[in-house]
Image 1 (cartoon, one colour):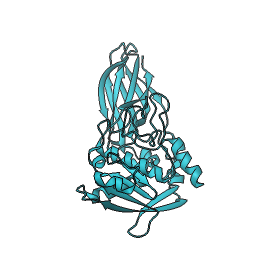
Image 2 (cartoon, rainbow, N blue to C red):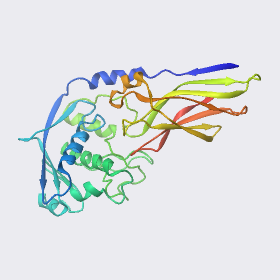
Image 3 (spheres, one colour):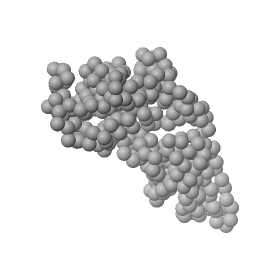
Image 4 (tube, rainbow, N blue to C red):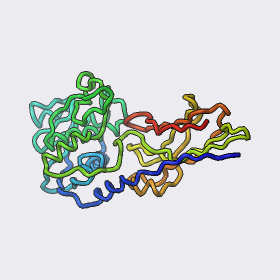
Length: 309
């Protein structure tokens, strides 16, 4: 029996981004939570979700250059949860159908908050992140954006709630694009700190090692796959699908402890590794893995292929 190993190291270079993100922010903006109209949605949940959105390194923190702090007193801006009928009371330019931003008022339409929109393809929680990012993006100085290249993530400043023509051929997206982060950084005179994430909501990972066990005739009989997978949308484990010569053969769960991965991506914790063996036919030539997504973003992304014949 002969074992052949293929190896690829974890990209430790992203630790440079981690070090920068650990520094103090360049600027802190304060905000206050308020309501208008007979709101029936859970205001405490609203406040928690707004805080989670504004503190997320994938968003307007620019990886840690900006901090947002909730306050009960005077603030830089106010995030309102307003009943649909009350949204136009902020300005005649606001519609009861959508959320709005007027001066320092970031107005979230309660109907949209609870139900999202018919065109939105992801969860309501993902929409809630999106709409906060979109309206706070206006407060930060950005206008509406049009869609870019076909299949690309739509800018968060695209009117994704409306779907249709504003989206063009882009795919729905929750978090600011790098171009949008750069625009805010330039306007505020600060930098964007790298997060180490190749994408804010798509699955990503790495095949670290492939070990091929061969029979007495040198043909592959069993393949061991070692690596890791993370989805930007969640800290819980996801998985990967395995293909042999283009044919799907199994799905594996990436829930083994990988402290090295947690060292590079501490927000997601260590439980994202996999170490899985599969039997393959003697004719097997190529084994490929695809990271499986969860929530917003792509449903899967390729991790790579290895020749095993």
